[in-house]
Image: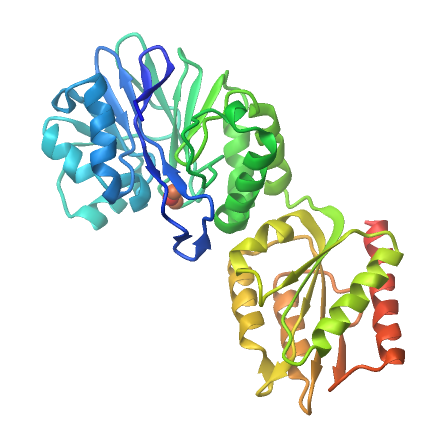
Length: 393
Ligand code: FEO
């Protein structure tokens, strides 16, 4: 694919990763894109440098526009190696280029690459004039690492947002309206849920800091470039950053002999009786990263595990470990499961939900061996009770 001119003199020159299906534990069924941007002005600027194995692809696109030795600045909005992976190689081709980055960016790049490059360290509000245009920088710590920053081009009204507003998707299209809102919303939600979820407070601060800017294009470090759905994606980020969930439930479970699964479906029936939409997520058939968008969306999170060896069934334990790290707030929790003789899993799951600060208005349920009809009716009743609580939220 040729470089794509997103505004006069400003080009997408990134790399498309058609093959990646697991991005350190996050399943990327649609592949991924690592975006880099080239700004042609009196000074020539490259923003971010894509993942290491896509160097040739990025370089070919840069060469379509300019001889890379003419690059004056390389802006490193983020140290993580999917964005900085080719910094050293680019600086070999453009040895006089300065590296523009945040204070934590400089520290991180030095730790990663052990090089004494010509750093220009910027803080929020700093500007660099590059001719007809200006680059303005805003630090956005923890969206996604401590070093993150975004680059704003006021004359072009473009925000180069790095990890913020990204989606993992490989496409020949470059703009949001060429794909459509539904697919992009799905991928943006999955991305937020698996990567940005713990940092809602910092996202909120970043959104506030950027709220006064005149923006026509949001060009993230991953996926499609936003030009049509900017209000929609900003609204979604506001909602996610404030942990605002919908009055719906997700039931996440695994089962050994089918008893916990029976309980899961009785809970579903009870919640539905109370008018609450329920999504069922069986950990035997779904990867943990494919469930987090449901957690992002749902007010009530019900988790079911059989007790194995006096504890949580390991597939559910893996999910809960992942969940704990992503720290969803303002949720209603409910734990359930079958057991043979110990039954400790429910208590252990409740401890995790408690540590997350979730409300648990209805007591969890455990049933020995195989639930009978009467017990399943009681489980259904617990689901209905929970549904009534959710409705009042
Ligand atoms: Fe896309 Fe935090 O790297």
